[in-house]
Image 1 (cartoon, rainbow, N blue to C red):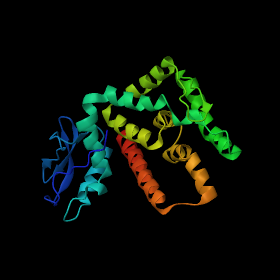
Image 2 (cartoon, rainbow, N blue to C red):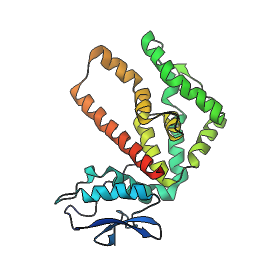
Image 3 (cartoon, rainbow, N blue to C red):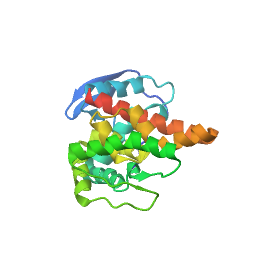
Image 4 (tube, rainbow, N blue to C red):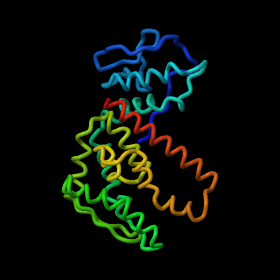
Length: 240
């Protein structure tokens, strides 16, 4: 699933942006007319705070509409057009990461890296076990580690309670971190966005500390970090 990026027009075609009530929620109104998604659904949000955040993106546009400057709008489009009709499938995609979760694959050497993985990852695995009764096996190397169907079913149930607006950033965060368990901990307030980012990049940070940074890799990493920050902001505004 990719975040929708189509904005209706390359040129700004409106003057006044406001949030107004609608049948499906808080609508974004451009000169009194509701914004529509690429699939022609009305852009209506369950949270007025999120709606105001999206409205501010439209207000900030200049002569042309720049889709990449509208991360909240893109996520709302994705939620409405792509996730709403297939919430169970999207939850299943998240859980597929749990079946081979980043936190379960450990380094044996160097010792310092292995210790960092233990510090960042074991508390999350322990929490998943105590909170949901989901026990995950860990091992060294890259060979597949089979996880129990019972544990995966419990993680799936934990994600399926989220409606489609919440599942959208949670799915994105999972693809960015490679860990459904880190994202579940974030969704439940156990970790913040900085903490799940750090936990997901333990090995990469270890390598950077030893060998330095590569310019292109740093740019790609910054772009991914910006995406995760946008996911976190979307979810925060949604829950406000």
